[in-house]
Length: 162
Image 1 (tube, one colour):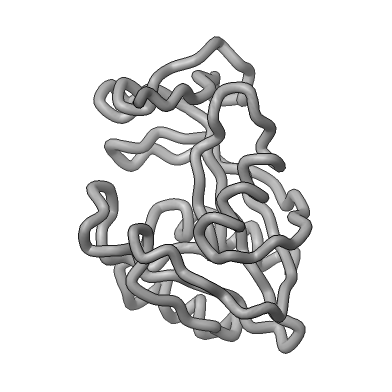
Image 2 (image 1 turned 120 degrees about the horizontal axis):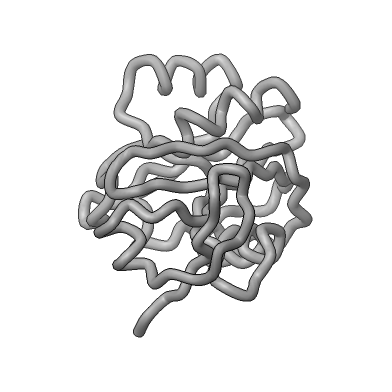
């Protein structure tokens, strides 16, 4: 099944749609996003990507990461993926966005935060586990462990606002 994404410019102006496989194969700039979930004790949820993932396997990443499918908003995509990857249904709040190009991904990445103390249910096709980290622990993971580009780019933006 073809997944259509937004084809965009560096300033996030929509040019049309592009299928996901073409976007990755040809390095087409497209929309994506990430969510940082924070508990009431200030700890943040990070997941460890499955080693079976084709792109950036076995790396730490944000609480949830997503592509924005053509026809949905960043906020809709964030809420959808948060439910799918963690089982959490919680409001999301926009923090900002950045652009990265780490082949095969070339993305405008929207960054969101959410708060929840509910139990997390990790999707085993997406991740092999999760950890709750204090902000300084996230800093250490970024410095010392393999991470996804969207965690590397999104954390500095989120850290300033959380």
